[in-house]
Image 1: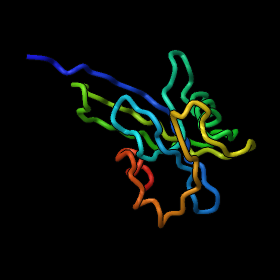
Image 2: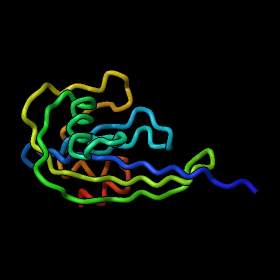
Image 3: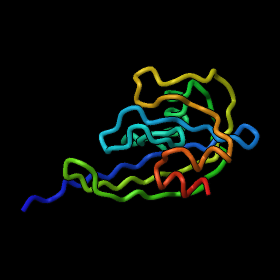
Image 4: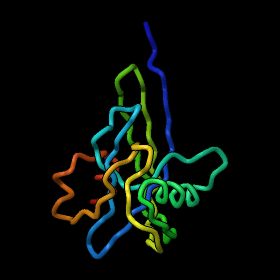
Length: 137
């Protein structure tokens, strides 16, 4: 009997708005079967890193934009089995953020693609991580 390898990932994400549009990024590469899905900009929290610093760092890396953290919005959980026998648990700390500068662009290494301002009417049609969809509702 082979036991699933347990992986837990804690991420900090930012919800930025331009009017009623929300900034989303498309996952380019993923070890957890999420390539092609959309999510809020953000990423894994490094050891010893404050989650607020993680979201501002990841936001700049993935979108080219500088943000400031306004408030904590939600904490979401994504628990599932993924290919390769991985028992995956993702935890998303979601902050409301305000864009203060920079120029919108895709992440240089291709991990995240297509940063796009998405209108509310378009959100339901995007393939998205369930935990992020729950936060957006």
